[in-house]
Length: 262
Image 1 (cartoon, helix red, strand yellow):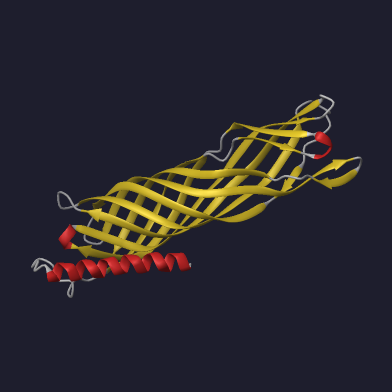
Image 2 (image 1 turned 180 degrees about the vertical axis):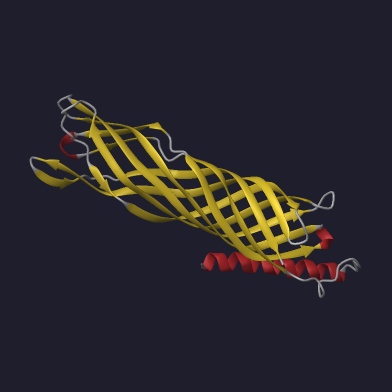
């Protein structure tokens, strides 16, 4: 939250500075004193691809090596979100600047693959595993729009903040019928990570108060992990010395957006 307030403060200072510079330079087509900010609310969604799988190996107890290989990287069907902020025109630069806070929901993404438990004796057991991933993203964001042909607004956007990443619903079963399940199970886990986004697109005026837009956005969501790994050994429940995680999660997003400015 402090990060978001800091970013919005910088943007506000830049807007004020642009008005001051315009006045000092004698530009007559700007009147910052009479320029009105507009309140903006946006709703957006679309398709997103999230790579929430991968390959990893971990050392367990008694020399056992656990290898995980996803056979199908996670793909989310979509994401949804909203933005609330203000819009300020800067005529000197032919820009509209939107600044505010936004929220996005990603997922859930299902990941499945194969897990091998290789023992020191050379024996190994093959398992199928599955888990799910989802994320909540909270950003302080800014959007810079220019105008062409009166109603088209090419834009660039940027945001920084935090993502709350969730991994859970872990399951593992032996591939061989009647085979012993030697794979650990894990508990659901939430983790908060630094997050950011950058994007490009075009908004089109529908009327005086509404715009419709299409664009592309790239979001970094940080890391996520399943915690509390345990397994049954010698009829006892024992913990394993590793967590099953994924790193540098990112999302490629195709965005459709409707914006209202009053």
